Image (cartoon, rainbow, N blue to C red):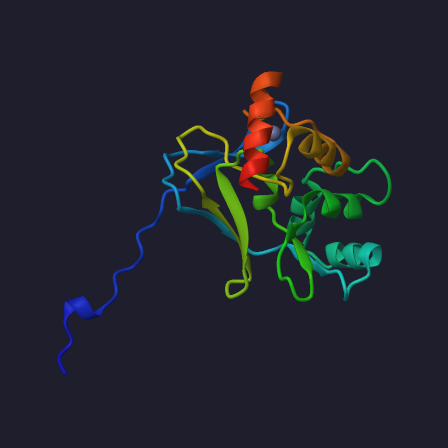
Length: 199
Ligand SMILES: [Zn+2]
């Protein structure tokens, strides 16, 4: 058997980063596209800083223990994330504000240093999904994204404006000002009817 150049695999070209962490007006930090990103592109693939399985780990103790077990750098990353809970332990508050679902059996949620900086939109340009094989949270573009546009995901509630607003205030202490939440009342009613029909 002869070896030739085509049998050796070319090294993957180094990919330009697709996003930058930037301050976003009224939202703290966010993730902004630094090139045009076509629909379907994997924007991020990130392993959790820590995970918590609801049926296995006790909530408060589990989080505190797991944060303490992180390296100093990781603890800094954890503590730099937002906390919308006004009461209780700051470690727990950060977890409640930022955790994303991971494994479904047992139900597990995790904290991700970069992905947890992605802000919400009711018409997001990206979606998150857990990849068990890679033990990572993935972010993919669900439509074409333009350079300079903020990368957004939906924090888990669809439906009509009132239900979304109540959920976001209750769970995350903010009022959404995305393009659909900023519509006039009559346009919003049309949008609500459309969203309910689709769901
Ligand atoms: Zn909105």
